[in-house]
Length: 226
Length: 409
Image 1 (cartoon, rainbow over the protein chains, first blue to last red):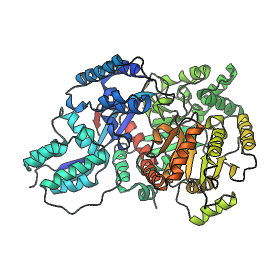
Image 2 (cartoon, each protein chain N blue to C red):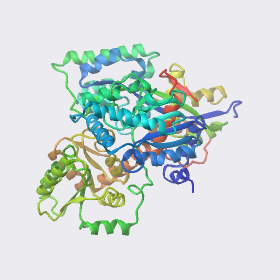
Image 3 (cartoon, each protein chain N blue to C red):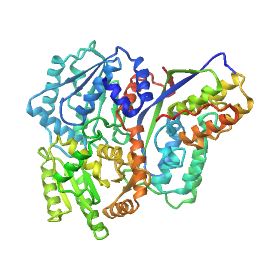
Image 4 (cartoon, rainbow over the protein chains, first blue to last red):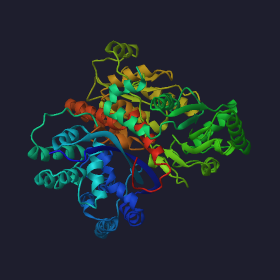
C-alpha cells in the first residue's frame, strides 16, 4: 500500500507561561479550577504529559499528582487521576467534572490539607509550537519505523494533540492510515489505545505492538534518545 | 569541529537537527543579549555558549556588556539581595545612579536588533534610554527568585517593565505577577564545560588525594556556598546521625570564598567549628574557578546532598544527577523539579530525614545505581543546554501570537 500523500513527521516544543497564581490546599485548587482560563486546565490536564513528571509518576495529570505528592490526599488524587480530559469535547464539561470531584471530596473532609511550603502548585498555561522536521513516510511499515525512533514530543503531537484537533476522534497515525486505505483493523487498534493513561514511552510501545500485529515485520530500528 | 557537532555527540543528532529546524524560522534575526559581566556567574556562563550556538544556527546574535563605576555594582548587588527577599537600605541617589548608568550605556552600546534580551536587574532601564527605532522587542530575563522581593527594590524595577514585550523566569515559583507575558525557561547545564565533562580517572583520583579523601570509602558531598539557607550544619548533623552505622563514611562540604558576603564568613566559621577535628569531615574552600575539582568530587561522591532550606533552581543538583549520583535534597525551589522520590533521589525536610534517606542509598547499592542512571537520563532529556536553547527559540516564535493554542510554524 502506498498513500498518495506521505505522512509528514512533526515535532513540537512546549512554551510555558506563568499565571502568577498558586494553590496551597484543595479549597484553593477548587477555586482555581472554577475560574482559571481554559488554557490553564488544558496545560495541567493534558499538555503536562509532554513534560517530565509522568515518566516518573503514575498519575497522568498535574492536579492528581499534586494532590497525591504535595497534599497527601490520596483519595482525591486517585479520583482526579481517572478523569480523562480527552473524553470531553470541550473544556466546560471537564471543568465541571473536576469541580464536582473536588467539591465532593471537600464535603467529606473536616478540614482541607495544606501543602508544605515549597510544594505549592503554581498554575501555568502553555503554547505548543509544532514544526515539520522534514521527514516523510509513505507506507505503514515506514511509519512504524518512524514511530520507533521519533521523539517523545513527536508522539505527543501526533497522538494527544491530534485528538484535541479532531475533537477526540483520531490520532494522526490512524487518520493517515485510514485515508491511505490501510487495514481497518490496524486503524481501529491504534484508536483503541488508552493513550491518556500511558506515559509517552509506554505509548510508543503500545503503538509498535498494534502495528506489529498488522504490518509485515520490518527490521527493528535502534531507538534514539528522545 | 563546530560547536553544534560537539553537542550532537552528547545529545544526539535528532535533538540538534530539531534545533536547526526551529532556528530556520528565525534565520537572520538580529538578537542582542545584554548583561553586566562577561566573566563569572551563571548568566555569563549561559551566554558563553548560547550566543555562539545561536550564531551557528543562523541567527545574528551578539552579546553586549554594560559597565559602570564600582558604586553602581554595589547598588545592583543590593538590588540582587533585595529581589531575593533580603531587607535592604537604598537611597534616592542609589536609584538615580542606576538610571544614570543605564542612560550612559544605552548611548554607548550597539543595541540595534530585532530582539534584545536584558539579563537581570542591572541593565533593566536600557529601554527607557534607547531610541525606539533601534530595538524591535525588549525581553527581560530574570534569573533570580523574585517571588518575595524587598518592596522598594521591586517598585523601582517594576517601573521598567512597561518597556518590555515579555519577561522570562526560571520557575513559576520565582515569578511576580506582571503586566507582560511571563515565560518560563528552566536553566540548564553545559555537558561539555569543565564542571560537567567526562574526566580521566587519574585526574579524579588526583583531586581526591589532594583533599585527603579516600576513594575506597563512601563519600557524602554537598557543594554550595556557606550560607544558612544551604543548611551545612544540618548536613553535618545528618552525617553524625549516620556515622555510627557507617564508620568509614566521609563527608565533604565544598564551597567558595565569601568575599562579598559577611554572613558567609560567619557561617563558614560555624561549620568549621562544628566539623571540629573529625578527619573524615572535610570543609573545603575552593577558588571560584575550581570547576574540574568540583567535577571530580561530584563524580567521586556516593551520594550528593543539597539540603537547602531555600534554593534557587539548584544547578548543583543538576550537575550531580548528570554524573549519575542520586541526590538527597531539601524540598524547596528548583530541587523539587529535579529530585523525585525513589526515582532520582529523595526530598527531605530535616537532618533526620536526610540521614534516613542517605542510609537507604548507602544500604542498597543497586537501587542507588539505578536511581543514578535515572537521574542522568532525566538531565539528558530535560536539563541540558539544547533544551534551554529550544525553549528560547520556541518562545521567540510565539512572542507575537497571544492565543494559547498550537502554533504550527
